[in-house]
Image (tube, rainbow, N blue to C red):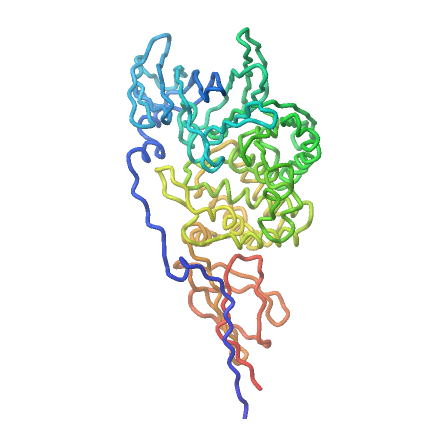
Length: 551
């Protein structure tokens, strides 16, 4: 008579929020949230065409003053315009066609009353004069603003960082991501012993009799507001020309004088980054504006064509491997991650910060693709799988729309693992590469929604991924593949999933690669062995309900 030994084996990871079924409650927006995060009636009637930001920066006082000339195209005939500038900065006057304009302030939003009739399709200009002591960054770039520091030689070392917080923390603009300016002139006046580095190409440097200099930088391509930056320091520079997909790309590096030799060694990874990402994503999107690495007194940020760097000239994330796999020490995290943002954040830009995963998920995934390009597919899989240890699964990746509120910080590693999972579903690495390149071509210099990204990827790989995106982006739970083997039959299903979740998954059954198509109801398939191997490249949890051994 046969006896049976029943072994219960649980291979599943849980977190408090997961086991308790908790979801973060949505926060009720206030008026300032709505003014900042929505496309208001005072924003939607005009389209940005041009900025000339013309400012004086006084590091001794931590003070900024100057103007922003705004060019815009009239879409509807209205006369009230919203411009954003956060306290304690203030607009002092506004003018158009040489005439002063009235305005009133509602918190961080200004409403300007235009005098002349706004005719549809006209291109008009207003000049906004402003000044103040901008918010000082406490923990840049996460709690951004102005970083007012000094270098080791006692020279002023100043930089901006303002994603999420908004560019209006230090200059007046239309501070909503849906509308990007077509081109921009950035003029920055600083003490004569210092250099300002901003986006685009340096047009000229003007010396003044009051012991100051003005640096004029011009951006030819569309640029989002938080991507605009000023960086002021005792800089020296070195350059090279990279032969890329669209021809010669100028690479300029600005570093503190005493870090020059370290930078020359560490920044050899810059052309390597561009090589890898042009392979995966297509041509660098801003050849006309060149590419720069600029040393700053904080970790770093993805300012368009002016990537800021503060990783202390070492590999990893301040010397640490975020994946725990060993591969994270093979590259400088800031060079690779912030460089990847040129494609996802600066080329393809979210319309609403609720969709911030489009920036951070894809760019976190770009680290994996850099490893893939230089160290191979196995190494890249180990890297991205290793980053799962930092995923909390406490709330959805996508945030609340129209109030300037991002989703879970899981948007980084969970977003990357979602994309790594979709790569498996595509079943064709070249198809996947062309999908990523196609995104950057289809949405070249565009602002997008998550829905547009989802639709493009689904159509490109020929699979309806709507339930996959809903599960990983709009729900906090990770799918659990539950299974048991009993009398030569494998029973399996998805648990902990949204209604209709039906993602296929690759497993090895009886030594053969097999694709299962689980649903929330148990399915059956014959099996000879007493175990299955589930592909770890899929970001799921596994739960072996019961193994039955005959003896």
